[in-house]
Image (tube, rainbow, N blue to C red; front, side, top):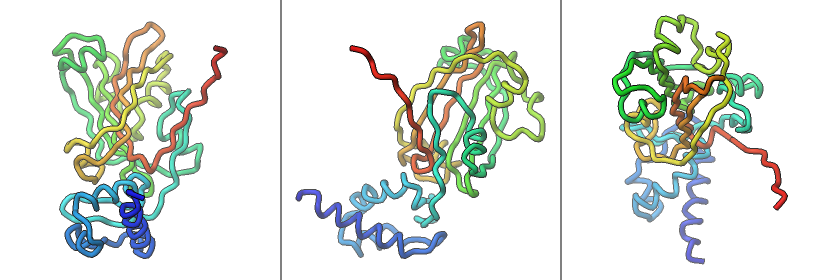
Length: 238
């Protein structure tokens, strides 16, 4: 019974969200906390589950808005595919915005992940993936400049570095990804139009070619409510 007040709070929030039209703003945090008789910290904790479901979106300096539910992108993790490929298979339209392609040099982290010298020339590709014009993922790919250069990506580049390399015929073989839940940093929260500290699903991965060379180090940040990832596993024989 100790959680009953919190469950009641979530039920009250769910009722408020359900009766608020998509695109409309909820009352401010101070007003809503006062209306519901809770602290702002408790209110934020209760609202996080609705954020991860994609039902509300907090915008820095603007408030909290109700959004219509977007169909989740559903994919297994056994085979590496681009978000664009997954979206085409599920019939969901996605688009790319905030595309930035720039030359950088390897720091300690990227030199270790790409097996290149500190100071080596790299290309970084950053972009936001949108579903129904809402930001749902922020993707960053970092590649040695002997693998990819900015001039290689034409004006009709659709956002997937993986698809570009496959279409070019690069002999890609495997990918290793580490997966975790993190709080959004300021530089990730801004393009995703969320609050700093909001929970994100984070992949950081290395992509290998047939020779074992790391050709891409990627950082992917997903708003959880818009993605359903799963893994099929074989049962061990003991």
